[in-house]
Amino acid sequence: MECLKFGLEDQNFDIRISGSNPNRAGELARAQIEAGCSGLISFGVAGAIDPSLNSGDLIVADQILTLEGGVLQTSNQWRSQFVKLAVGFENVFTGPMFGIDFILKKASQKKEIFSRTSALAVDMESHQIGRVANDNCVPFLVVRAILDSAIMDIPESAINIIDYNGKPKLLSILLKLIKRPEDFSKLFTLSRSHSLALASLQRASFIASLALRSK
Image (tube, rainbow, N blue to C red; front, side, top):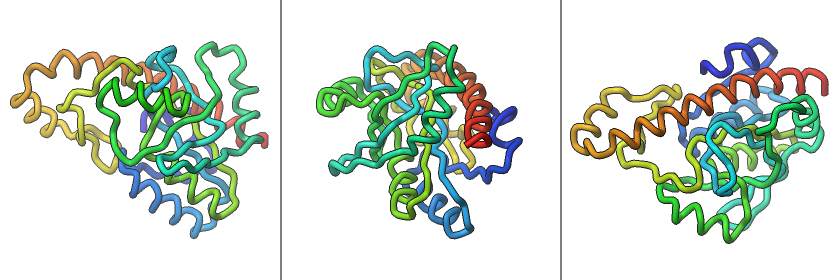
């Protein structure tokens, strides 16, 4: 991932990419634990639920709330160290996130979840990784950059366009746009938001490498 270029990949981290696939995220996390990994990090993008958040804002979750009503705690030590090193960056927020196995495509869905949970953001991988971490009693950190705002609908042409390596399926995108040309402007807006999120993640990867190295 480009956002790791100057951060986590330069340290003793074993990086795995789930490609927006919650089941794969859990499988990879379990494999890492079996291989002797001493802690897990969920790192990537998320959708805002809190309407005050903007694309590119960073979320350092203190817990992950699940659809079943579960609560998965993140490492207080790792989280505190990250936030300490991130002082001076205005767009870093700490609070709960919501984990779910499918994309919340509509702003109305995000609004409903926010009213029920007051979570800051939602993603499809952190709850799966968190379950593995909590089950195996290893520390767990979640750092996510906001991609889509709470009021943004995700166009149909943006669904299932990321492969297992986290890369866009360009042919799939082109074919979807041929069928739904009205999605072009929405995809362009989402692409700009994605650039903001990646810029924040690049900065976050460097902070995370320092935070975990000094734990």
